[in-house]
Amino acid sequence: MVSVVIEISRPPFGSEHTFAGLYVASASLSKGIDVIVLLRGDGVYTGRKGQIEPQEKIHLPPTENLVEDVIELSGRVVADNSALELRGIAAEELIEGIEILDTEGIHDIILEKGEQIVVF
Amino acid sequence: MVEVESDPKKTLSIMLFSGPYGSQDADHMCRIAEKAMDKGYGVQIFLYGDGVHAQLKGQAPKMFMNIGEKLTDLAKRGAIIKSCVRCSQARGYVEDEFDEEADRYPSSKALDEVKIYSLYGFINFIKSTDKLITLGSG
Image (cartoon, rainbow over all chains, first blue to last red; front, side):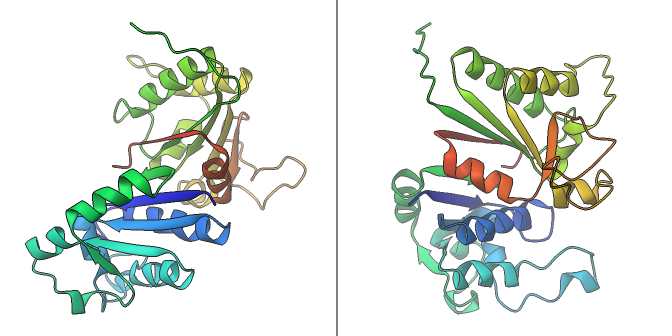
């Protein structure tokens, strides 16, 4: 099976990048591609549950439901533990189904899991 | 410099996420694509986000490589170039529903050589490529 790693390193609402990456993740899964979404750096904010509906305030699409879609479609969503710790985000604050890995585990995924890597 | 032997079976795919002149990404993309084709690669390009502005007809930069002309040249050499319909629609390129016969969403503003397409165009590139480069999105 073709596999792709999608790295997201930006926060959810500051730019178009995050939801563009999550759209690629969902579309890939629906076409039978094995997907791992890596949340690193400020990208870990995308993994927080309880995000308010952004379109009420800033006219950008929501990302929480897109993360849930990826998990529901059997994609893996992995957050970098050091990025979480640095930002004071606890595991219980994350959307259900997100895995937490240390930096070594993240590097293993980048090197071993994805035939292709798409960076957002 | 070590020259790598060309392999006609190889395919290079490039996703461009930034606009044609705000950075060197589009210029870099065209040069890599050109070099890859010289070496026998098949080339597939997907324009995503602000990258869709590279499909605009009538580009006339004074100080930069004309990205529109370069994409046209690449397509004439056999490169497959598609752009995201959602991004193109947001930026005013899409004028009607998908045209089955032309296999693209119609746009009088976009280069004829670029097919405005669903995101699945990019997903098919991922599935069929040997190498994938993403530019402007990191």
